[in-house]
Image 1 (cartoon, rainbow, N blue to C red):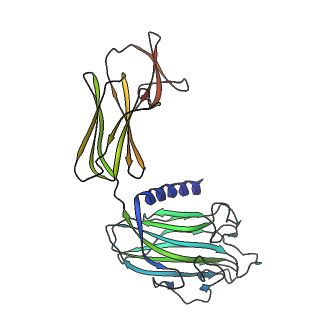
Image 2 (image 1 turned 120 degrees about the vertical axis):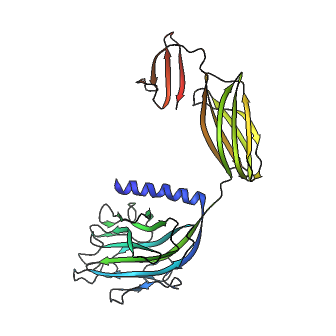
Image 3 (image 1 turned 180 degrees about the vertical axis):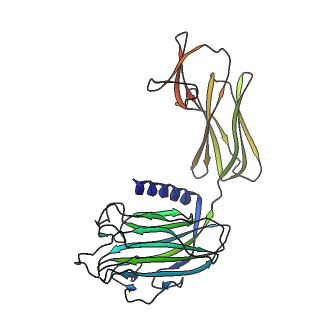
Length: 354
């Protein structure tokens, strides 16, 4: 359950970033060209570069166990990069857990004592472990696994671990895609990837280290208000934009119960504007409670919905017998959602209670 929640949170975060941001690659090391000047920190015999498996051909950076049950470790160091402190950044890499060197060893595959840490240094400070992927019960997976281990940098460690051993490629927890989102602030970023194994047939394979700069995209419409109020024999609905880019038109919808919606007005948008623009509509077909929502369309057909908002007229009030939800359970006036108000005269009304 913990892994599911973390993955869901990351997918949500990733979806937001992808839809509203532009990513620009500013540094990379694909292990072939070393254009980020990354390399294994120590020249130990169990680390190196091998061609058996890779994302971008032909090599990966690899650490493997030699079978002595002692801690074998090294850092793949990616040096400091000067970045725009006003923008966010994303570090990405690919990871595989393999047993190519000793596939028949009883210890082959990755266990809980074998792990990879993504360590972050900001502005020349010390390295802090942010994200850890551990093995479990001789687990293996290759670069074809689609599972993602991702988080926003917090200065504390978050751990991802498979739920079982063996081949994890098709189980959803062979963490091949590793991502660390770094909020703006630092003007220098450095990454160390710490890798640890202990026994024969335990291997971490790593490839495609990348650092991206994140630039927020401008929203097509900056809406500062969307309101409604009762005035004499109509409801006045107003909305104000602070700026517009490639905006096509607005569609205003109304409802008497918060469920069934009807288009009551369509207005052309300004298209391109950097100044405040006010729009309004006078609705003379209202109920005791009227709901409104606004749909804004871009010239490319994309749209965004605002609301719902509502306006209530406090005339001709009847004594209320009770309120119930759609399951028939009695609720009070603070209940949020669709309710049925039953009056003492035997009539009833369905409303959306905000």
